[in-house]
Length: 128
Image (cartoon, rainbow, N blue to C red; front, side, top):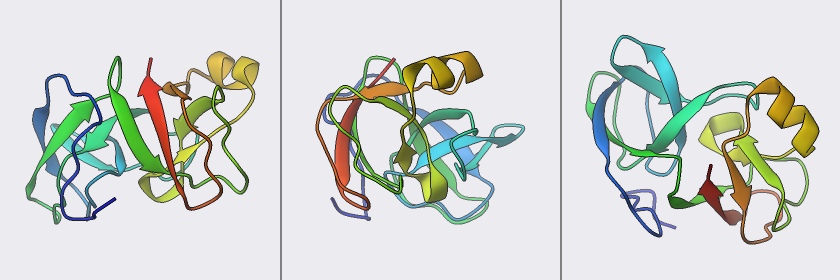
């Protein structure tokens, strides 16, 4: 996966936001202020989409929505993410996993893995 541009595996409608921090294409982003986004930093963050391009603080970034879109992201979990695992936001804009009951109760479920990936590898997942 290139860090220059990101395009979902299957796409829907993207939308523009303003970066409030440095963002790399393909990172999960969260709302950080009025019409601004920043990379997620933990599995408790509420991701709203995936950055479609790299952007510096103050620059425009295209955000791809989560629901119904197939994405590819870096596994920032300390272990393997297995196909079928629930997906949550992770450190440095990557994705993480946990038990379905826990992430559902916390309201942090953003998708389901459709491939398996070791730590720091790319995992394909679909947003819910």
